[in-house]
Length: 234
Ligand SMILES: NC(=O)c1ccc[n+]([C@@H]2O[C@H](COP(=O)([O-])OP(=O)(O)OC[C@H]3O[C@@H](n4cnc5c(N)ncnc54)[C@H](O)[C@@H]3O)[C@@H](O)[C@H]2O)c1
Image 1 (cartoon, rainbow, N blue to C red):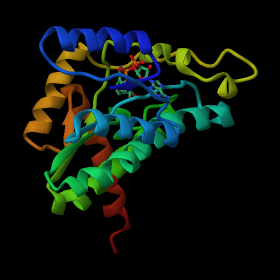
Image 2: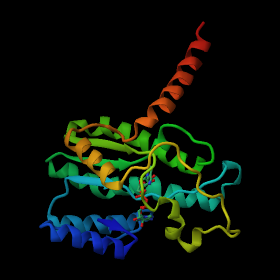
Image 3: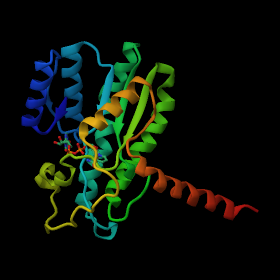
Image 4: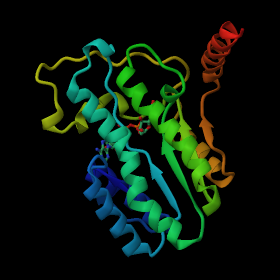
């Protein structure tokens, strides 16, 4: 596992080991390719092979796009989009060379399928992760490497305190961005979402849509797209 949070990782490693598993924790900033490549070297060095890659790290900023700063864009896209790209660049060539198949799980969000107001920078990053994952699933089929894209709504994590992970160089000069908006729908426990993600990997399902509350917004989006096509029909 990789994260910026070394204490959090130590607790997770301990939990895995106490149940008889093996784990390796490596501090890595996923927005930095060199650090993710060093992580891949450590992982392949320790375990010899990697079959499942989860690109999960993510951060959020809230507020209208008209007030998003250049640093907001750099930080959120750096972690949420470049983090996934770096994961692929560092791990995928060796996973393909192993010739044993595998699976890649990218964490996007319902915000990668439906664009909520006041979440534009985050939406942009997550739409990109959905597009990347949909294409990746097609591209990797010949190698027996499956792809899933995890698209939750609310999950009870620390995402609303994302600023804790913001590097000083990317903090806004004038503090006081918008407060996190309340999300519609249920807030699921991380364990519930993790179980759905594991089942999707086992069953090689592309979309992992954790909240049935997402169905109506998804339908409305599809209907707007359908209407746009029909209204152009000659
Ligand atoms: N919680 C939700 O409601 C929700 C909903 C949809 C999608 N997501 C997505 O789930 C994923 C996990 O987030 P979470 O909800 O567990 O939030 P979280 O803040 O609890 O966890 C995010 C983790 O990413 C790590 N991280 C942040 N920046 C990093 C960086 N540059 N390099 C390495 N690690 C970094 C943090 O230390 C933290 O451990 C994210 O991609 C997020 O966008 C969350």
